[in-house]
Length: 128
Image 1 (tube, rainbow, N blue to C red):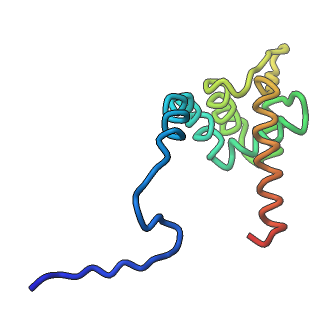
Image 2: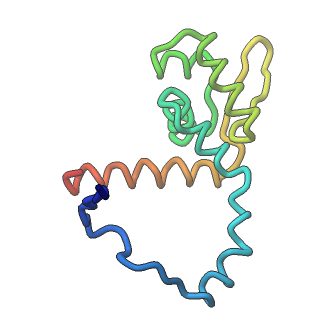
């Protein structure tokens, strides 16, 4: 006896397989430019690290102790997340005596975090 699979058409999948070769030829060679970008999003996918990065978009520079208090953590936890952001090239630090101050590596990181926050806020306002 043969088995019949019933596939529900959800409307979000092509019903036939075809593609535009000119589009594929134009886009495919450029697709590897994403290499390494996933690490940026991976670093920012942790809620605590995203809070740290966001705090650093609101102030040009913050002490580790300030960041710990802002995110409600210990300085050890804040330092751990800051170190990861630094190792990923998203943050930098400077030492002043016994204090360590962090800032975002460059304006691209600030823009990325700000755009993500704006996008999320707009999604909430649209009822998502």
